[in-house]
Image (tube, rainbow, N blue to C red; front, side, top):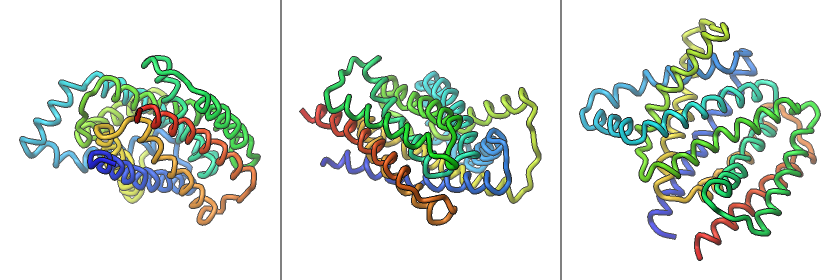
Length: 296
C-alpha cells in the first residue's frame, strides 16, 4: 500500500466516523422532536455555514481557494449539490419513520449505483462476480425492506432513490474534477444546500421557528457530517478510486445497526442480520472485483 493510499484510507475512516455521528444525532432529534426533514436539514447546514464562514472569508489564502473552486469546479458543485440535496430530504424522510439499522444498511446501495454508473457512462464491464454481487445485494435489499415494524416499503423506496442521488455526486467528482479541494468544496456545498432548503421550505410552506438549543444541536451534528465528514470524503477522492472509497464505508452501517440495537431499543432479528449480510457481501464482491481489475 502506497503512502497516497494510506492517506486516502485515513480520510475515509474519518469520513465514516463523522457520518455515523451525524446520522445518530439526526435520528435521535427526529425521535424526540418530530421535525420535518427539510427543517432539520436547513437549520443544520445554515448554522454550519455561518459557523465556519470566518475561517474561509477572513484570510486571503482561504478566499482564493474558495474562488478557485467556484471557477474551476462550480458546475459540478452546483449540479452535484442539487442532486445531493434531494437525496438528503428523501433519506431524512425515511429516517423519521424507520429504524436506524435498516436505513443505514440500505443507504450503502450507493456502491451498487456507482458500479451501474461506471458501466453506463465510463465503459466499464461487469464480470461474473460483479453480477453475483448485484444479485446478492438485491436479495439483501428485499430482506431489509420487508422487516415488519422496523422499515416500510415506502421508506425503503425513499432510501434507494436517495442513495442514487448520493452516488451521482461522487460520480460527477471522479468524472469531471481532476483534483478537488475538500474543505472548500464542503464549505460551498453548505451554502448551496442552505439556499436549496430555504427555497424548498418556502415553496411547501413548512417553516418553523426552533429553540436556540435545538438549532445549536442541529448545527453541531451538521458540522460533523455535512462539513467535516464531507470534506474528508471529498479529499479522499484525490487519493483513492471510487470503489475503494465505498469499500471502507461499508463498515459504517454495521456500527450504526449496533448502535440502534444497543442504545435506541431497535429490535434484534435474524432477518435483519441476513439481509445486511447479503447486501454487504454482495457489495464487497463488487468492490473486490473492481479493485482486482484496477491492480492488473
